[in-house]
Image (cartoon, rainbow, N blue to C red; front, side):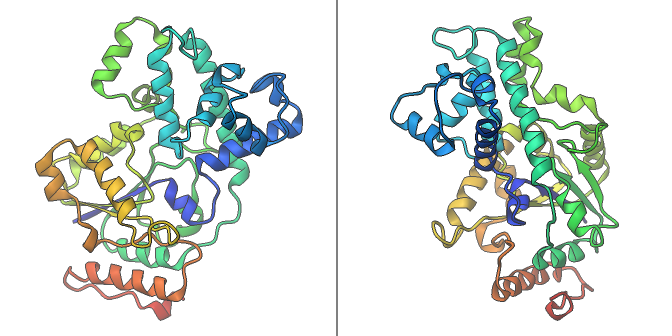
Length: 353
């Protein structure tokens, strides 16, 4: 039996890194206003004091996406449904599909891609600045110590290398694939775009305009051998148990996640849900949202029923500021399920605290 660990942006957020969409867009607006580049790179001559003022101007209708020099950024700010990376990428595809239509934000694909490339480069710059000193979380130390008892492969969807920086000792025997690239590795450039389905991809490519395909992930994945390494692992590995840490399983990663979830060698999918003590004290809402996303990706009722571990047999995702009670609860949880295998020795909380 083998572990496949999927790491998403929630893993970085759990460690206190400000890597959400809202963190990034506020940084970008604030930075460009302060350095004087906001008017000629993002909005134009319209006077905006700060990020809060920009949101207010949208709210009262003084500014619309068409007013922006970078209309893609304008569409992101006005669209309140956008709250994570996969939504940004899905937004790109939505706008891409409307290019040339009446009242579309962009009249051609090159201008949209130029806007999108500005966001991509700004994102890289932001994340490089955000990465700093990250402290380990004891629950994850215990978790990674436990999983290394079985052959383990980790698929990191983040551009950051938090998992390597913080848990290198616990993961010495693990195989790590940075499926979306790495910020500081030119040989593994970041993958930032939309994971079009086969049907969507064929529709785009039939038009005969290559610019439509520039930020479609199936093309971006071909710049490295990461996807090949993942397929080889799936094909050559029996009885794979998947654990998801901080990935919402949104549609923008459908291309890779569908390959993983529906592979014949996968026998279970378990995700640790996020629990917001102020809004969702049980974590059931986050569990529901993620399970529906997984169902959408698998697209097979029987596989979904047989593979996905239910809510009562999973647990909340550990966070940086967890108290001792929550840490103890999580370690008891991983001991319980790990000890189902004969001969396993529990992780003693006194040894890691």
